[in-house]
Image (cartoon, rainbow, N blue to C red; front, side, top):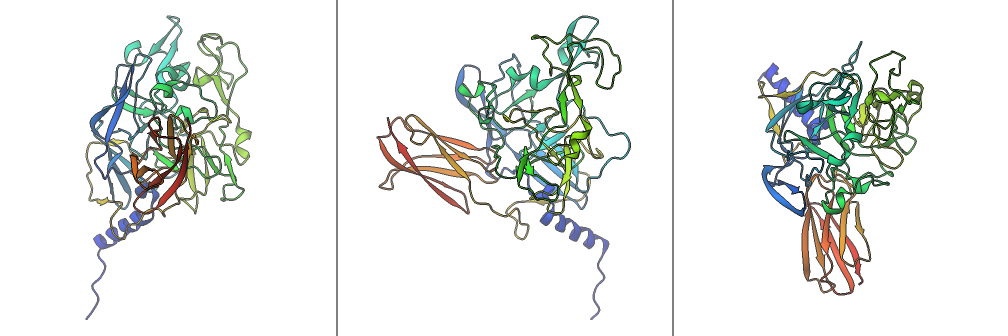
Length: 454
C-alpha cells in the first residue's frame, strides 16, 4: 500500500511541535496552573491584601513562527505600596503578547526603545526602559512630562531608576495606570549587596529571582524584538567558557558639571546644572557609551547585550542582561536599550489570528527544562523571632515549606510560590532547640536543620 504524502499542514504541525519541544521562548514562561492570585500592600499596613486577579502567565500558545503569551501583568510576589504619591495599584491588563520565534538583527539604524512596554518578564510582568516619561522643559525651568505634566522637550530625559526610587516597592517595581512594571533588574532591594531603599523593612517582598554570583543567571524575560533577557551573571566568554562573571554596562557617567551638550558634542537646550537637586545620572543624557569596552568579554554592547551561549541556548543567541554594579544596584541602561538589537515586529495584540497550539507544561512529550537541584538558604540560623527560607533558583514550581519538631510533628507550613523566592516562619512561639525544615516540590525534597535560641 503506497504511503500517503506528507501534507503542508502536517509539516507545519510537525514544525510547531518541534518548536515546543526545544524553543526556550515557549518553554520558560511561569504559567499559573494553581489559580494563584496577586497580593498587594497599602501604606501603613504590612499585612498583604489578596487580589482577585490571577498572577503570572495564564496561557502560552505557539505556531511555527510565533509564541503568544496571555497575562494579566500581575506577579506572584506582593506589590506596593508606592510611597511617592502614585495613586495606582497593580491591576489586570488582560493582555496578549506576540513574540517571534525567529528573532533577527536589525541592520541599519537601530530601533529606539520607547516609553511603555518594551518586553515581558517570564511571569507576565511588563518591562519598561530607563525613562519615566518626564523631561526637562527649559522654557519653564521645571520638570515636565507624562500624563500630568505636559510633554516636556525630550532633550534631557529623566531616568526613572534615580528619580522614582521612592516610589518603587520592595521588588523594584511600580504601576503606570495599573500596569505594574520593572524598569530594572527585578530582584528585591533587600537582596542587593548595598541596600539603597528601606521599603522592604515594612513591606517585604522578594522579586522575580535572587542574584547568585556563582552561577549563570536565569532567563528572566524576552524583549519586544524576541531576544532573551538574562540576569546579571553569565559565562565570561561568549563560547560558554571562562567561569561566571558579572556582565557590565559599557555606559558610564560623563564628567560634566553643566548640561548644555550631549556626549557627541552637539549643543542642545540647556538643562539644570549638576547639583544635589539634579545629580549626575538623573538624566539619560548624563551617560556616554564607551565603544572600546564592548571588546572585552564582560562588557556589553550599546543595546546592553551580546551574542553568547547560555544554558537555554547552547548554540548561542543574542542576549540582553539586567545589568548591576559591583554592589548589585541597577546599572544604566538597566535591561534593554536605549536601542533594540533586533527587529521589533510584535507588541500587544487584541487576539490570536492564526492557528496555534496551547503549550501546557504537564503535556506528555513536551518536556520542559531539565530539573535542577533545589538551592535553598535558611537564615538567620540560629533564629530567635523569624526565619527566612529562600530559593536561590528561579522557581518554576510551587515549593511547599514545612517546619517540624524532632518528633516529626508539623508545626507550621507555608509556600514559596512559582515566580517568588522566599517564605518565612515565625519562631517566637517555639522553644529553644533544634527543628527541621522540609522544602519540596513534585520532584525534589530538601531538608534543613534549624536552631532556635532566645
